[in-house]
Length: 390
Ligand code: PHB
Image 1 (tube, protein in one colour):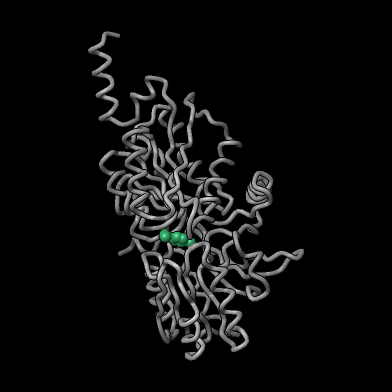
Image 2 (cartoon, helix red, strand yellow):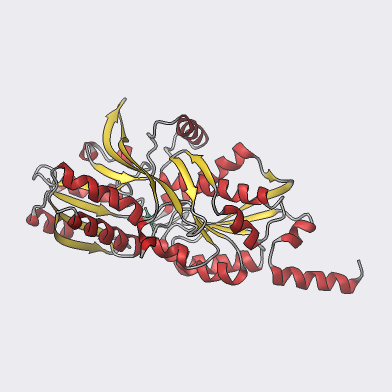
């Protein structure tokens, strides 16, 4: 190649970021996985990275003749960091796909970068309903809080719970959980005695729990993000709330499989609604849990791991559909409408919303062989995000 052609090619690559040109040059297909590997949300990063690596170990690192490269970056769950890392990954590394997003503010910070650079952003964790509307390049493989909350609002009033207090982390997913749970619960004839919000960073649950004790509802509905459930459960027990006749209910974030086994007997009989339990009794899940634990010193996978594992599948399948060529829009188009069996059960990526449609299970914490599990006892099939019906 002449020098001039080389310079032109280089300029072109810089503008187009990755995509078909990189393919033509035999470059690897790069996935920039931005996760909270340290800090308050570190368990989410650990779970998703382990799941993504398991996917690659099981499915190979070559897709349609293209070598796949995973680049993992730690954003410490600070959205300014997530934005900076995403920019770097797009401009310098020329990643073909961005993925991860441990919390909602991270996903929202990266959405404009995905749009401007036409880079698909696969959201594997963050779960506020509106995230997928923040960019046409976002595809989600986790869940939404409205999706997970509504099942509990239908179950509770039929099971002796007439009054509740809600306690949620004061940001996107907590506000979604509060709204969609209470609206439906009231619609079903229930009464909401109070709605409490706790800060996301370094929350002290004690004063809030004291208030709940005084109000003495039939149940306390809780949403806290993955990793914070054990602290709530501990203080709930220490304050003797369960002995005072107050039940704990919530989305499955509070009985997170990453922590559940260490929560102790206070977690027993807690009922939650969610899209994934490590105890999901399907052959596909048994295989997944076994392989995950084998590769990770017996760590039990949680719902974050499944979001990561399925996110990798969605990326691989989309890359196959482009024959290894990639390209932002072609990849997003290849992600839309995918249907597959996940360890969580059947999953569908809605082509209109780019959001995940899935079964929501009602589960109760039970002890089996000395270990605590979220044991599923009912299932609501094909639940779309209720937040999209606005
Ligand atoms: C979020 O920030 O969107 C989020 C994080 C952890 C969860 C659920 C939602 O468990």
